[in-house]
Length: 286
Image (cartoon, rainbow, N blue to C red; front, side, top):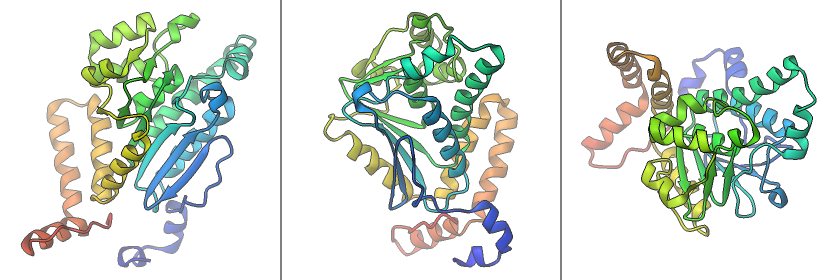
């Protein structure tokens, strides 16, 4: 334990800090290496669709990440040259048409909770998107902090194509903030695919990579984030999310409080001392 942990009551630590490198995922692949957690949706024969089980497990894992001490950035990718084809037609869509309102609301709240936990966990999330990225897969990409794509990626918010509204899992709130109101409206009304190069121009993708280098580039970016002041990165993510609903005056005051808190960290002192010594700071996340 480090010095800051030694000062904390063990019962508080036990309830609020945990290691997730040893977590055994049941419905996707999970690996932690040098602070980077990688989620691989692993049903390549069906282009990696989500099921009731994988929705719930993803929701729960992102919820646990709030307390993880050994994961400082997360990469989400798909196996077999595709990201995610959305909800499984046979395992989700078929059963949904037989349910009544209370159970349908249970499902839609569960899917929304996945987005909530993705936004609430302090770790930056990077989606590495190749091939098909549709429906709920497009939502997972949208809910990530950063998106790397390929020229052959095809992102589609397909909800209206199956008789549903485009207001799914926060799409009407988040997508316009990423690509603009008009462009988001086009995608949500038509359900058409957004190609990789167009997605980069629109700002949906931070950059494009070759398919062969995509995962490596995403994990490299995640590693760079892990080398930074991870506590401060978590504050940045929190403020980027919370300030959507604030006035400018509220945002400035909230940032003043958040930045003052970061100034109390040892990482802030380390950065100053490294600058004085003309060295690169070695951040430890405290």
